[in-house]
Amino acid sequence: MTATATAEKETLGFQTEAKQLLQLMIHSLYSNKEIFLRELVSNASDAADKLRFEAVKNGDLYEGDSELAIRVSFDKDAKTVTISDNGIGMSREDVISHLGTIAKSGTAQFLSSLSGDDKKDSQLIGQFGVGFYSSFIVADRVEVLTRKAGAPTSEGVHWECEGDAEFTVEAIEKADRGTTIILHLKDDAEDFADGFRLRSVIKKYSDHISLPVIMQKEAHGEPEEGKEPEAPEDETINTATALWTRSRSEVKDEEYQEFYKHVSNDYQDALTWSHNRVEGKLDYTSLLYLPKKAPFDLYNREGTRGVKLYVQRTFIMDEAEQFLPMYLRFVKGIVDSNDLSLNVSREILQKDPNIDAMRAALTKRVLDMLDKMAKKKPEEYAEFWKEFGEVLKEGPGEDFANKEKIAKLLRFATTHTDTETPDQSLENYVSRMQEGQEKIYYVAAENFNTAKNSPHLEVFRKKGIEVLLLSDRVDDWMMSHLREFDGKQLQDVARGSLDLGDLDTEEEKQAQEKINEELKGLVERSKAVLEEQVAEVRLTHRLTDSPACVVVGEDDMGAQMRRLMEQAGQAMPDVKPTFELNPEHPLVKKLDLEADEDRFADLVHILFDQATLSEGGHLDDPAAYVQRLNRLLLELSH
Image 1 (cartoon, helix red, strand yellow):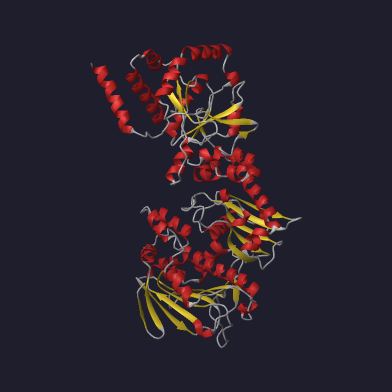
Image 2: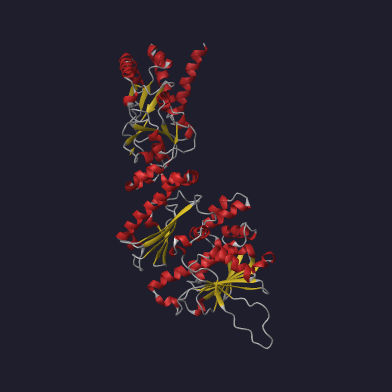
């Protein structure tokens, strides 16, 4: 940051990313210009919430005035709109940090997400916390006058910017705490310097704000001759009641949606919500929302998350992550409790037994909301699953108490439809299970096509047994925690020996035993060739079209999970797979007749490497595989 300073005034340069963002704002990324007022009123409301929180410990911060409010005014002649609050205010350092660098806003990710489509890009802005900069959509010059609550009146700050690469900061005398923003309107935005226009925008977007938004009543007509004009009166434009404190029957869907945008910084409507008041052993209100679209940092488990926490309508914390588990980190909303002490801190929250009870209840509330959506609005649930399904899959490993509830919400691709769309539930699967089928079968692979074409599915397709096709990164880990559903064990078809139980006839079992005895020599010869690479060689009856496959041990880590751990740089113990040969395949039958031991060894290695590749695995020595294959091709060409 560059700076040229005088005794009182300093000119500073914006951070590079802020410059880019400023240009986007100036060129009207928002499809609807009036959004700027919603953003600034919302920021003013947050400043009041923060003052309430700080004043719990230090009542002097109110400076004798605890009536918090937001004031909006305009000057038609000067072409200005002014938004003022008497909230927490900012110091000089705060002003430079928050208005000059926006370092915490995720601007770099925002800029990299832009598509070039103004309408689509405008919807991204709110997700990145850059609302103040919407001022420059309607203004070519913005002034901010502010003083932090509790600071001397001489420590007021004047920030000014004309939408270019620099801004100025200077010390001023400011009698009252809080922040005033003066927007000098562009020529094409002069219509906002109008009382009716401002009132309609405030009513439309900010009616749910719990603070009163105040404007002066406008006089209509000329004052009577010789009579002094009356002093202007104030009027509150919005309802000024915390939306969550109102009865559900009193709140319109449009109000719920606007409140969602206020608490989430999202520019799209919520998918659905749940508004509940709980009384009894615990006394609290919750208003929880499910977004339509995943935020850019959804898969960052270290990112900010959680609901807004209020205690008796006093703002306490912006991201109270203790109230919902990590796998529900996409949920937005508020919790207002009467059962938590006002001087609560993060450490106290974590130890308060009431938090555990509320967390359990709120988690159940979200899962019930999802269950209701899945049953009554399957199209909406499919939309939700597309955005958040992979995160919900973390649930079985993190929330033992709700494992069965979460399992009912999971959706999978299966061999029933053979499409990549994950639209089948475990309940659907169980309803289609064959007579005598005791297990739910699944296969996990690196991608859908590898799973769909896995040789392990061959006998299942032959017998018409449905198999779940798993290809998300989290699937193998999830299945290590989700061992059963509805009393049915979940079985990885690529793990351990295959036992179809009553699904195999007695004739099939006898034929398998007979051929196992006949080809015992082939198994022993093959084991001698692959002794360093495999734990075991055996015949299999899980294949119909492929000559061979590899399987992991019953207690070993799955191939998909192993690859993920290795990609993450974690050292993994050397675990040898089991190599299985299909005794009915012509190649295996010819292999049994091969007398040349060198050629036999080449053929066994080729089959083993092919089986590894068909599972999405990687060869330890690809060059050796190519050489063996080339030798075989040369022999066939003679």
